[in-house]
Length: 334
Image (spheres, rainbow, N blue to C red):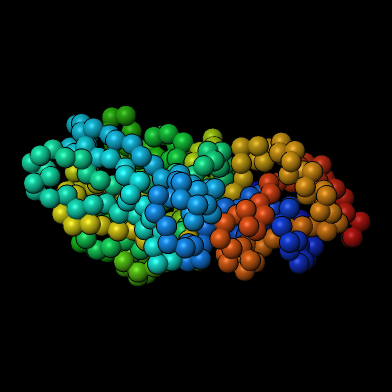
């Protein structure tokens, strides 16, 4: 939701952020307002493997799970693939995801392609600003993705296809991108040029509201769509994969890596979206509510500098009563 309806007086009330942002977060560039934050600054994490269980990775495992599952080959997926936990580690200040090299001998033996994926612990993200900074190595034959997912017809993707000769191309999609007959759905997918190759660290972002999905490259608007806007909650995921399909291309014969410097998500939940999060309402009111306006700007340096959301404080959204009180207070100010 946006606070711009109240005009500049509202922004003036924001003032200094409360220590735990009990009343949510306001984006400095769009004015959008969200109730929660999820932040992982991997540059502050110690090296660790076995991220689901390693105590050194507790800041990661509070928010994420390294996936471990196998999918067989099929008409649309020529090679079987397996998400291996060992392919996701924290190393040298980054979350490193790996697709292991798949040799001609592996193919002849019908071995699985060893890939990597993480999924958020919570599955109720509903609207938000989803951001990550990552690189993908130039080894050809893998797909690096950052996406929101509910099911195959409710999905928002940012993807790098390393099979492509141009290492500045990135793909934005709001699924489904094809109709049941296989025809391309106009406006559902777009390939755009990055300012720098995806082999260099840069921020990738999509903002999802009721009205549209907007993709950014850093702070620069790259693409907007009003097609296939999801209306349900879902999870956030990142992956690095190949299966020999036309989309991924032949798996790389050498290891492909995706290094993630950080993940930062300002979001509502399925509960806070409707003002039904009573824990938030209570916490915001306890922090002073509209009188203290305990909300933070997304530019607050404490957000990006912390290791995880738990360290900074995460709270959901304003209830309708709080907004009504805000409106009345603004009238009194006038």
